[in-house]
Length: 133
Image (tube, rainbow, N blue to C red; front, side, top):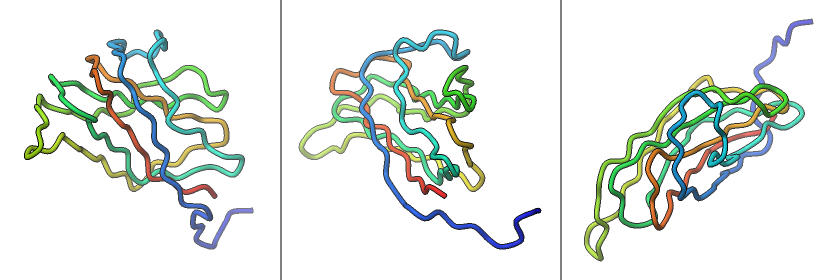
């Protein structure tokens, strides 16, 4: 039977990881420097935002966002976040970018994995605003 009532996430959460090593493979075949940002729960997960905040200086990098199958394998490139070159100081903030999603819903076992295309010494904090069903 089809669900005829609206469903809302029960448990809001902010998932966060720090990535500093580079990966340039956009096919998902090489997963050596990809990091698990989150895994969908048994009843599924809705993601409303994925963002990135550079922890210090950045010579420019892209955040690669992959989604796996329900076994947590075979990542496919879903989206990217561009972070341009910036030198953080006591008066200049490091860069932060956020992508918003109205329809990113994951089935049980699917993962969001992230990587960066250029190494960043202090790392890039990558976060997701999510809710579990």
